[in-house]
Image (cartoon, rainbow, N blue to C red; front, top):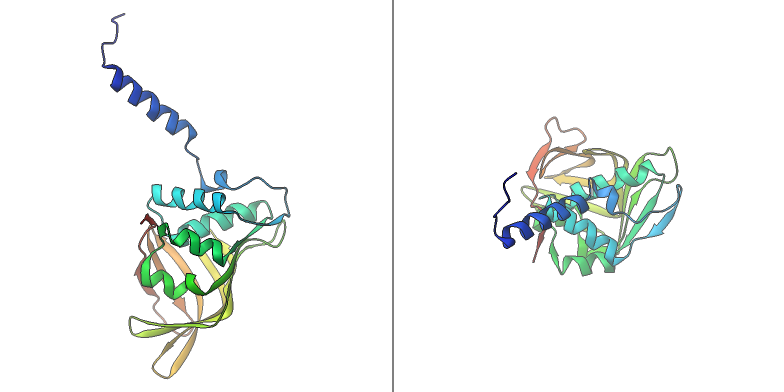
Length: 208
């Protein structure tokens, strides 16, 4: 058998690539701290950083990272809470998506974000608590968020059964019912009484 004469640098690079591939998590759920079923806990900065690095490496948005996290946590009947201070600290290192993200997740006003389920067998949920109500005019409409809003039924690619959020256009206000992640980095915002959803491209997570 002929002896390989590839330069040492090439061999080293190949070995590093193989090692990285072996250590690369198959899913975001592999990066969550292990916990018994039914656990409710606080997320720390190291764990949040892992999730955002994962999202950046795969070109995901913060909503895609949250969706995948909630689905993984709900499978074990677990819930984690991210404090507003922790989220703002992360936002100092990562660009989470600009005005379109801020209209649905105003990081500057967040008191806490809860991801997961209330117990084994319960649906995944997203709950956001704000320090004050939020309204932002964006693309011909006002998006209004109460101090408690979110979605009571989170499944892969979907945030459904919304509460505490509405869209106001002219003199009329409509409840924001669901956000569908219909394609990578793209969402469809479904609003009650409106036949067609608003479709947005959401900027992906990047390091500043």
